[in-house]
Image 1 (cartoon, rainbow, N blue to C red):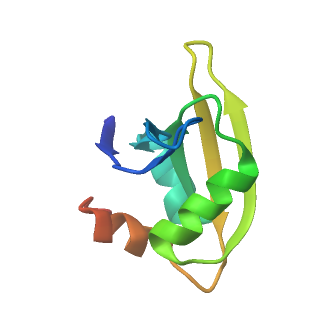
Image 2 (spheres, rainbow, N blue to C red):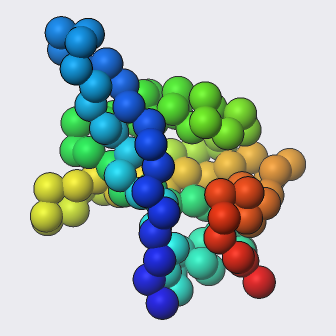
Length: 104
């Protein structure tokens, strides 16, 4: 059960004329489903150059929700994975369903 949805979020490149795609996709698997359901954590796959500060800005801009905590890890295939804990007053399953996923 692996599903992902590609997001279209670009930031300006070094010369401000090029656009760099930073967030690749939202990861939905059995493990991340449990994180969504029980821990209010959403998982993103992104470019390795993206750091926690910029990721926080991107998530606030995309969704407008308060972020409690961000953890990240670097995968062995040249990507970065972000685990973003949304504030307990919001529901990650609502965010996911607004993006088009069905969370039961």
